[in-house]
Length: 233
Image (tube, rainbow, N blue to C red; front, side, top):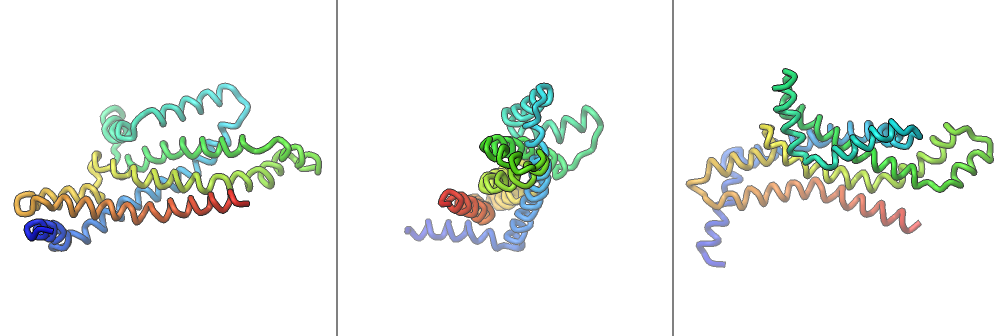
């Protein structure tokens, strides 16, 4: 490697350790993980309820659930963030912080996605599971909670981990509603060194990529391991 290239790379990564830049990036990652964690917990709770609601044999309820699901899938998350952060504030006078708007949007989106996973898991149960439960005298409620749900949860775990990984990665969009998270802090560091170290963006974005990788990779590997383990049974 040419000495000038080595010098440029060294200067770029040196920016990370100037002052509290790296600590600031870690703090921004903490904000990202916090937003994702709160959104994930709420999505799992509401998603399970929404998924069970989607299996109700009531046509109006099923139509409303389908409209909500398709709306959340079709509408880009960035547009939803703008609607929540700017639209609610101007239209209804509701004051939302960037963090609150982000959690609201990711929870609504995650609930729809999780709900569809739950619906699929419940409806994929073989009919004989219900028939066997009735044959031994179990009520419909007992069949659901003691036979169907345990099997559905096993199917849902790897799929849920995949959804959680997607939600963590999507939190990078919160920068557009003023949340000071890891991407925003990275942009601030790059901007403050734009003239002195033009190559700082290489090191900063590489570090942000590595941080996201460290958060998402274990979840992805865990999901794959569980899926393979279940498939081998």
